[in-house]
Image (cartoon, rainbow, N blue to C red; front, side, top):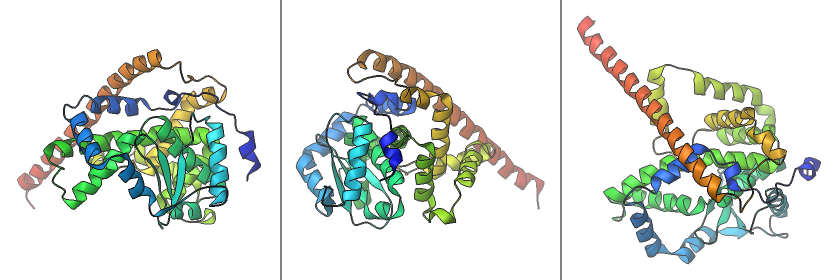
Length: 325
């Protein structure tokens, strides 16, 4: 175990609002206002239930313990100590070659880590992934993430429950799902307390490869070019590239994480300036209202950009016919 792990500041009684992105909270708040949202989720929940869903995820995975995947167990224990988790959540390793992890469940959340993730990442990077998933659980994301996963599977199979209402809910869930990843990236960083580790993990997850084959500085530069480069026509393709995706692109996530660090919020939390559990109800509601407003303004900006870009594409296309060969 790296000695840096022992130097991490324990974030005693930290509330998840400390790391949650405003767009995450606003999107989830907007989801709950969809008339059919609760109805669809309750119907799916009634069909499957908690126990069958847990068995479906865990039946082909190995539960982490001091004697099974002890490296993962030790890293996870340290992460939970750093984030001062209010409960213990099971961790399971699944024999899956590609690198990924997820937090699932309803009343009793748990984490699944693909074996490919364990093989690809070093100790600090793996700790970041575990802290990221703990962030999902502490933020109360797991129910909606599990429902998203189930709806995606049903949609792929053409299951009749996925009618127009359920499809509308799925589109909205996917939009929120991507925002929730930004929040948990921050939780992951707080779990390891080293920005280089967090961004290095994203670099490996984006492209794989060994440390000697990649360069973090170039990846960060790539992230900034993707976020700020291009004209309005490029904005259309950036939006289209995300349709149907559960996760925002890693290059964008690196930019988002760097922006949060540069805002000063990360350092303030490490100094102990963060909301505590049990102190959050009133400021949380105030923050949700402000976040919903900010998210709405941001969404309108994207719509305006895409609309303008579409107009330019149309005009250029029609102009090619007027001008002739």
